Image (cartoon, rainbow, N blue to C red; front, side, top):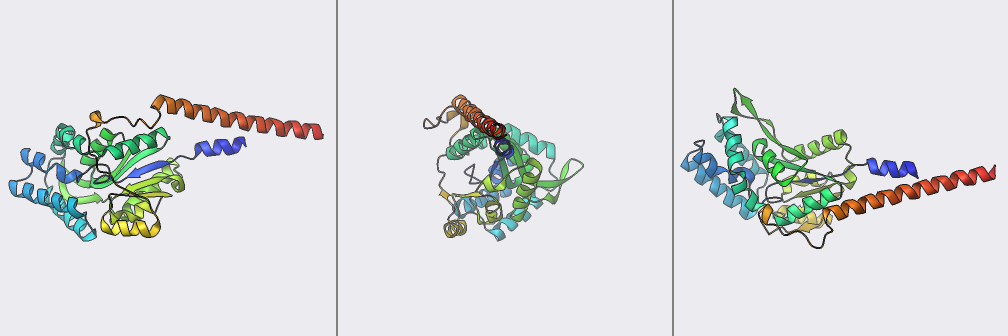
Length: 279
């Protein structure tokens, strides 16, 4: 019994979140278009094109072909950009641009998973220079994101690692191996049909604001479908009154753990006493 309790405690779990239209209400990369323009990285025509791409994305999501076209366009667009300048622009504008578009429902879910002892991992096709600060903003434990090739401090226009489709599932499998996650007890959330490999790699997949193709897939597989519709600044969020406070949950978890350990010790002692009496 004690071995069972110890083994159960050692089995770690995580919740894997796509970012765009799952945790935040827009495309994280396209949201910074105007800031990149003001920083001199792109021209007015590129700003209009990214605004249009954002509109199309919000209207109906993006299938594989659209994602490929967006990847090619953004790779060519950022060729020659100074990496440090990009990081500085993101750091200066992230609170104004990203904080207001974080879904309240997603923030609550992240809190719930943390309180349940699970790691929270953002797995996004957007670039690491954008995703990593957003991950820090929302309290993620780890981030998986696309990485560009950097030469002499600037983007070469080539992609070193593309966190898309099956690559997301491979990253999750690698994390499960290195971090000891039990994927059968893990969770995953996404809005896109392109993330089916990610969703089916865990025991608890959820479709969030799904595009039409993912909605059909979710219904055919009996995956829960969630609707997130309340973007809100983190500092303006109202605590979920239906949930116990963090200290209360911590105390409750400690009490449960102590009870399980005590039960295991009682069972172990009784078994030892019974064997002794038989002798």
